[in-house]
Length: 259
Ligand SMILES: C[S@@+](CC[C@H](N)C(=O)[O-])C[C@H]1O[C@@H](n2cnc3c(N)ncnc32)[C@H](O)[C@@H]1O
Image (cartoon, rainbow, N blue to C red; front, side, top):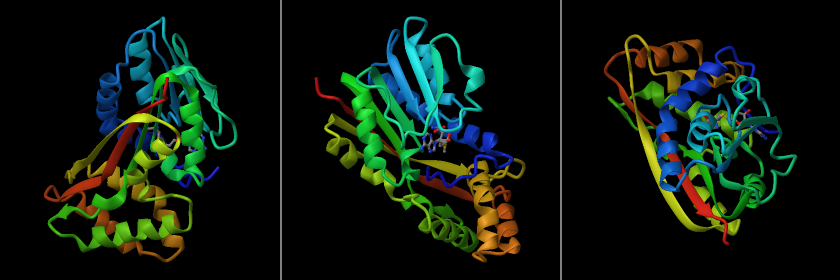
């Protein structure tokens, strides 16, 4: 498995919940548009803290089914019950259940994998004929968009890219999703891309940026990519109450398994 973010980091749950808060409304909107309704069978790949599977379980109701798979299911286990089943699984090592689901979803998982096309194919095979596959991942093309211009933000984002460079993480993965869906034989491809406004807050800071960088900071410091003073300046900036940044582009794309 090639996941670069340390699952044992002390604030990992908080970081994943922040991601959920930012992106769950968009995911819900897409699933609704695709017809998510009572009785559907859904699969969420790399379900994290379960924001999406909770929404899916509510929508499919008791006659539906939701399977949450993740390599690390510690945050998901307490949610199991009713339509929701949790399974520990490395999706790069095991195939997903075949031809079963009305909706197969993965968010912020495939961008980490060394061979994402294999998992897209596995997701396509897990959809029933006529079922939907939705893949959502970031594309860092908008990550430097910040006002007022910030040298420290630029330096820290450049360091993130240096850390990524030694790993399978693909910071341009988002733009590749539609092509991968087509290559997996899916049709009726749809695409949406959104960059979230991430304003600095004097009290809360900007958790999306600060927690990601907090996760990567030990590696950045150990490799001498930046100094503690750089990190302090970065955190100060996201508490200044003035800076407005925009997050990496969240690219969501979906396609349908041919009948
Ligand atoms: C950044 S989190 C995203 C969580 C959730 N999908 C969301 O968007 O809120 C990535 C998740 O993918 C899981 N993951 C990473 N590699 C995996 C693999 N090879 N098989 C299964 N899960 C994996 C991690 O354990 C983590 O829960």
